[in-house]
Image 1 (cartoon, rainbow, N blue to C red):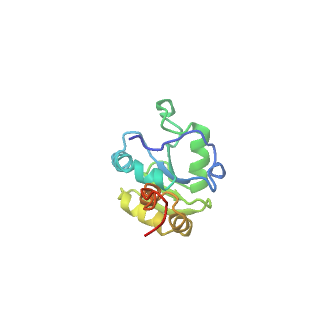
Image 2: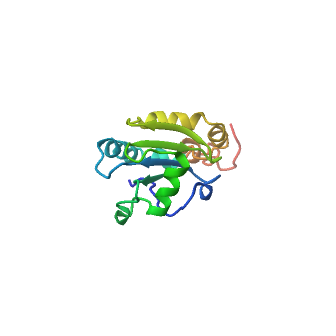
Image 3: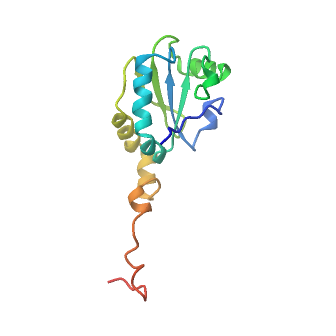
Length: 154
């Protein structure tokens, strides 16, 4: 399954209240930390999608934008400036639905479980889970009264 990568947005406010944003700042497309982090995120694409996570990837000068995965130069520049990311190190930043930074990792690969647990502990995610939003078990749960002809509960 494909990772929810996007390159359409130009700034964070475009995602506010609709998506959590995970930004990978890659010094180079072949950076080993970046490649490992990207593989881990790809393997957890369904879990990220359930949590409304959009993954953005940026390089210092917008290099590799022709791959269709990386942001163009103007967007990359915006995100590097906004987060104060270093040009030549791997960084990952998580932004919540409210638009504020929730997590930052530098020069290390972060297990996806850390990101998922952090998101699941956030108040808005807790509210979503209570309301059954993004909770596969409640969305796909069978209605126990459905098979009873008169609809009465026992």
